[in-house]
Amino acid sequence: MPKATRVEKTILPNGLTVVVERMPHYPSVTAGVWVESGSRQETPATNGASHFVEHLVFKGTPTRTYTDIYKSFDRMGGVLDAFTSREIMGFYFRVQKAHFPEAFEVLGDMLVNAAFPENELERERGVILEEIKMVNDTPSDLVGDLFLARAYPGHPLGRPVQGTVGSVSVMTRAIVMRHYRNMMQPRNMVVTATGDTTLKETRELVAGLLGGLRNKALRPLKVPSFKSGQDVFKRNHLEQAQIVMGFGAEPASGPNRHVLMVLANCLGGTMSSRLFTEIREKRGLVYSISAEHLGFTDTGLLSIQAATSHSKAEATVRETIDVLKDVIENGLSEEEIEIAKDNLIGGMILSLESPAARMGRLARNELYFGEQRSAKEMIDGIGRVTAKRAAREARRLFTADNALVCVMGRSSTLKGDVLSPLSGRT
Image (cartoon, rainbow, N blue to C red; front, side):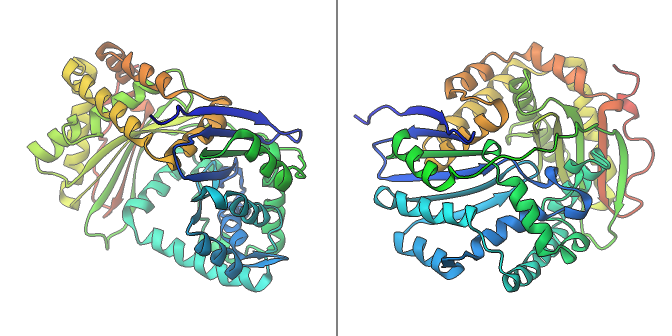
């Protein structure tokens, strides 16, 4: 029988949090360093700096070239990767147990001693500009950025993670280095590990490599304000209109987060969900339509996204609102609620088979809750959601003054006030 897993946590003297889930029956270790820094911590002039840093730490240190870094992980048979979001940067790897100390030493060197060579910065600037073009040529990605910019006007949450052509083109090494130094603060960081390791082993590695980091003053986060309405982003060349509909909701750690997860799943999380059934299966308006609760530190959205031909876009929006009205007026059936709950719980349980998913879960718990939350707590929270609670949340959310509808397509795609059916409700 496999030994039970165990989650342990410690905080280093410099404020850096270390969380380990020991899984001795796995022959590997998956570990990551998570930094509370993303486009949200940037100004218009530094938009894209976090993403730039993410790319550049792979380009070498005073003692390692980027080739040395890649060859190290190739020899270990491991994987090394990173990402940047609006609120978090993550650097993570998976290796055999025997290679864990070496892998963490390489990653620690990358993060603490990044050299940011000028020639590599210029080369990577070109790579990022191509990435921005790729996003701009991917309608489903671009409409998400445009929607958030419209939802949170003038707020960092509305800025694209990758930056803009304008901001990245003029970003200097000094700007990137300053941003790097400001973000790499231990109280801003969490290290998580899962697999065949212990808290003692991981703590010693982290302390040796990241224990020398020191804290600076952190810029306080500006609380965002959601702006409702409707808008069309003109893109006449597109074959399809891209639709995003969002409603201001609770943050990732909000008390009603489980209700929001179930409500979103009932609406557009599965092939038997209400929107998929009504908009695709019965009316044939779209190929796919989805809904999710998008949670940030201090705000959130329940968002719905779909794509359809320009001639069907307005009908899709209006039919979607009709579905929401029906949920407001008549609620959701017990069967819909139970399917959504079972689907969410099943997906979460299956994800526990992945060490990487478990490692990410440890990090999100620390970053959004400041403590560890068990899988059982989440399962129980979802299990307590009732049709009555979901209907009450729907009535609270789905109002015209809490709704934003954005369509990217031809200028004639959306006509009239599509939100009027939700007006007059509080």
